[in-house]
Length: 561
Image (cartoon, rainbow, N blue to C red):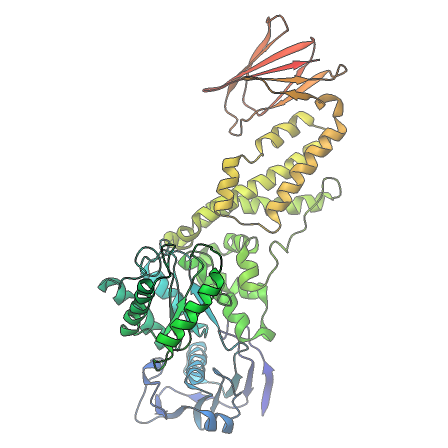
């Protein structure tokens, strides 16, 4: 009796989510006495370490191929399978070897979900949406250990990905300076580990070469390319790529690149059994954020979308991926992900889509408080992420997290500036506003490790301009000065009716400075200490000189009516 048809179980149950799971009435299949494996193609004994294999017990048949897959109603695409559990035993049928392997992984999860070793009678009919599903390790090896890289491949295999593209820019034997030399034995052994791991997970390992800027297009360099590819073929690589993005531009370069790839395919790839045309672009293979743990979010998202788009819920998938990779810091990690490119690239979520930004005037107290809470949460992410066990995620993302926290601080102070401005507290507004300006050094640091690029940072930049424009519009009589730069002393011509001057100092750390005021005759009229970035004083005379004395610099400014 059919109990449930076409049920897509939650992602936390099966990974990835099958297209169709049907449960049937019955006591279930008792596996406590073990299973008798009928591995028709002899391909899977090493993959069944999750069940006790016995000479007597429940029959488990694993098979694949076009004829048997048609007989069992398997979708005719690579990676498709049908898993059936009934009173007769267990049957796993794949369209191809990869499909049967995926069916075994679903069976493993079914066993893990039923600790009493009694499996429910069910049928899982599943297949991938996209035939090619992979990821690229093309960024930097410096932030990853070999073990971290292996963990990425293991995760990709768990999520039924089909290809791992190895192309790190700073592997000296992939690109500069040793692209034409053979790997050392230690590095070759590490590559062979990755290849073996891919093979066990029925993934294709693609090794890419990146000729550097010194590639000269000579026959000698072509021979070096051929030699390096032959070396890699010797150690077991069967899928190759060549990335030519690092070559300097010159007239006719694209035609040269095309001719080079065609020649390599003809001379190297075509004569070798099992070697296909060279991969020439990383487009279509997700290249996640740098860092082992951080990259895992991208792999979760891309793999889930590529397998079953109908059952894909981007927000739930993101939350699930974070719970799987960093449960101790799930809250702050989610905040970072939602405001960074990983939300769009990996999960198809619009960056910062869950919050509503407010303008200078058009907001309610509730909208203000909601946005303020989000900005404070962003500001606190670096310190909260420091609680990650062994700092695994923090080590990968630390510079990004630091800049993300600073962006949250800037946005929080922006809202405070808006509030003070709307309340008419102009001195308080200027203090907040001046302390919240980004210096060139701040911008360089942000651009080196950006986040919030689609909405957060643009919002900050837009509102900074709107605030100063509104201030000048409403307080024209106080700030309408003409600037006359001088040799070490800046002069500002103030309107005759101006009664006060407002001076913004470059003092973001609010260090103590001494301020001296003097009149046109050079007589000091006031001297005091201050620790802010804002100074307001009365224009009593026709000219006022302001000296700001810090630990290192002295700023001299003259205001003339």
